Image (tube, rainbow, N blue to C red; front, top):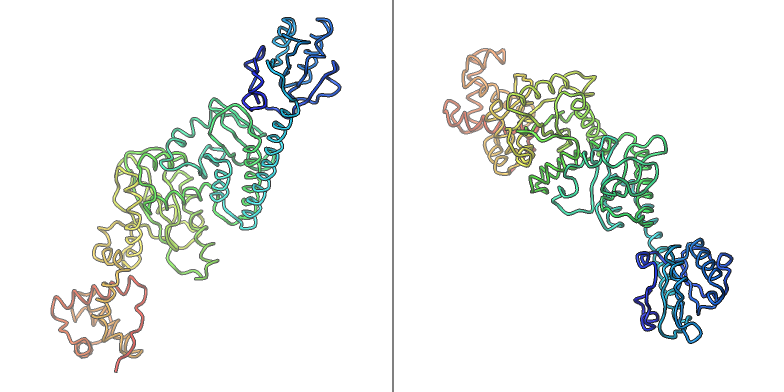
Length: 537
C-alpha cells in the first residue's frame, strides 16, 4: 500500500511496527470513532484524521489496544493543523500492541486510497476464483480421462509452477514433475530428507526444509503424500488447494485402477523406459531417480529381460492386463529379496530389469535366484518364462541401454533345444545375432531369397520341404542322421534331397549353401512366421 501513488504522494512515515508491514491486507476502513472493536473484523488497515486520539492519553491508548485486539493490519493517521504530530504515548502503545503506525505528512483524499486498494483486493479475489475454477476443470478432466499418477502429478506441478513429488509410505518417489532434468537437485538424498519431514493429516509446511506436504488417501489409511519441496514459511492457499485436489484425484485413480500395477511399479517402469529410450542422459540424474525409488547405488548394473512368450490373446485390452500381471509377478519376486533393482514392461510379454550388484558373480547368483522363483507358477503366475541377460557395466545408463540386446537374447533362447536358468549372448551365439537383427529388412530379404522357391510351393509340399531342410541343416549335412531323425530310409532321404536341390537350385553338399540356408531358417524362426510370397507368372 505504501508504494501506491495515493499513499506515496502523502509522504508516509512509519512510526511503529516497521517489522510488521508484510501483513496481508483484507480491507481498508475509515474510522473516526473510538470504539474499534464494534466495526472491525480483522486484517483491515484503518485510516483516520486523528479524532479517536484527541481524548486523554488513556483513551488514545485504549483505542490502539482495540486495534491490536481486532487484528488490524495498521493505523494510518493524516496529520493536520489539529493534530500536527502523533503523541509519543500513542507511538509507544502501537509499538507495544504490535500495530503498525504510519503518519501522512500531507493531506490526502481517503477515497482515493480505499478505491485503489479495494480495486486490487477485488481483482486478486477474482483471480483466485478464476484459479479455483481452472483447478477444478483440470482435475475433473483428469478424473474423466482416468489419468494415472504421472499425469496427475504433472498437472499439479504446472498449476503450482514448481516441482511436485509423490512418494509412498516408504519414502520412495512414485512420480516427479515440474523440474527439468537433471532431477538430482530435487531428488538427491530424497529418502533421508523426506524422513526428516514429519507426516501430518493436514496440508501445510513441515520439516527442516519447510516442504509443503499433503497426505494422499483416506483419513486413517493414507498410502502416500504429495510434496512441493519449495520451502518457505507462509501458507499459500492456492498451493494447498491444488495439492488437496491432486490428492483426491490420486485416490480416485487408485480406486479405479484396481487391476493396475501399483504406483511404485509404475514409477519404476517409467524410469526404466526413460533410461532405455535415452531420454535421461545424465548418469547422476539417473542414479538420483533410481535412488528415490529405493535402489541403492551399486558397483555394477546388470540388464536382464524376462520373456513370457506370446501365447495369450492378442487384443489390446487382454495384452494390457497380461503386461500388468507380468510386471507384478517379477516385481513381487524382487520385493521378496531375490534380487535388487528396478523393473518394468519394455515390450509385449517381456519385462525388463536392471539389477544392482556388487560383482559379476553376484549378478549370476541373482539371475539364478530369479529363474528359480519364476519357475514356480504360484510365484510367476505364468508359464515358463525365459531370462536373457546382457553384459554388466558400472553405468546405470549403459545397463539400461543394453536391455534391447537382452530382449533379443531371451527371444532367441526360446528356440534353443537346451534349457538354462538364464541365457547370455554367448549361449545363443549366431541365433542371438539373428534375433537382434530380426527387424532388419535386409535380413528378411536375404531369408526370402534363400527360401523363396520353397515358399512358393503349395501345402503340404512347403511344410515338408522346410522340415527336411531344417533337419538336414541341424544335423550338419549328414544324410544318415537326417534319415534317422525323420524315421525314413536313406534312399528316400537321398531322393528328397535331390528334389530339394532342384527346387532351390543349389548344391546342399556345399558348405556355403548349408550355412546360408541355416541362417535363413534362423531368420524365419525369429519372425515366428514368414509371409507367403505372391506367386509370379
